[in-house]
Image (cartoon, rainbow over all chains, first blue to last red; front, side, top):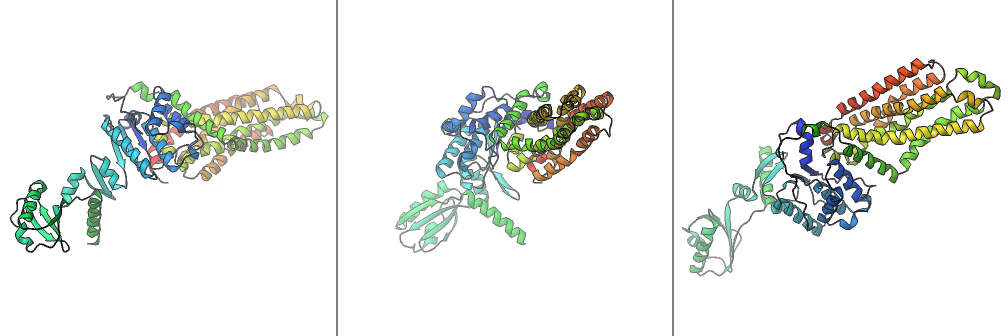
Length: 251
Length: 260
């Protein structure tokens, strides 16, 4: 962890290099924002605590609330104070547990930007979240847990692992002979009709298949409304894994 | 939120052994100061601590005020003042019992225990924060008792009652008894999962100290220099052992992860 062996003797030094923001902010509600941060700056023994507190508060947009008691803050603001507290020691590894829980979309976006900036600056961030779009947006690698660890990898890897790549085609009127249009095209593995005017084409390489499909449609005289690469979200990945688990349990 | 805090201080390598094993005064002070700030913001904590000793004051005051002027001779073998030593044993009990489990129930313990603070530092800070107000209250109540006796007791009673040896015993044993009570309370607080249970057990665990001081006050145990010295040494050792034992009982992992 942070360059140190995970042994009890290294406990203090490891905790010095990491920082944790729990799901519940765990602030001292009778103390002011600055007093809360002062306590943690001393626990981390950070040099120049006042500057560091100012910097952390500016980073979460709370510079003007330093003297407010934490008990008087909204849930979202408390969440931000907890984030400022986690930033105090300039951690090498940062654990964030549901950092945007309870935040309005604007505040959540600010937190996302901050996490992104920290990532860019070289901080390793472990983000635990139920918001899969958040994981998709922020994480380089994703681990999906459903009681146990179900899968781990880059979001694109997970998608490729679970879902076939497809193109979706929509035409103005149904194709007369779709089998003839899509047959023998490069990188096309198969197709199926989805509704009246929609076609789902399984492909092995979308960059090769898409131009060929469009050319074939034009040659067949089809009025093409749209051709797009199907994109499975991380939520689709999660739901697929969970349904696999449930099926296995039923069996 | 435009100004990210960057990852600094990334020096790797093994930790400095001296730094790992030494107690950091700054971290102890951080815990202590935080506790005192909380007391200040919620004055009822300290006032609540003072109520019990004030009630405790009634019995000896009534006894002393009802003594006739000629009773001073009978007081030669009595140590009414030592009865007041029950106060430092009882006052910090509830506060100490709250110290760990209370924070745990409020959800404020987890963030603290994930910082570099060592358990000994955390416990010292907590103990100091219980010790200072408790001893201050115990001395204040004692001074109130002395003032009341000096002002309102029958002539001759006060000089017979307020003996130097008893005053010295009060001065020395107050912090020792408070310290022991605090370590017992914190030890209980680290192991239970309910504040109310911790406070009840904390009070019960201090009854033996109260019993001993009461037996001495009522002369069931004869107060002598040897008893005083022996008692002081035992309490000093108990305080030292209490700190170490409480530190050993403090299971950081369980306190963070366990729901019980």
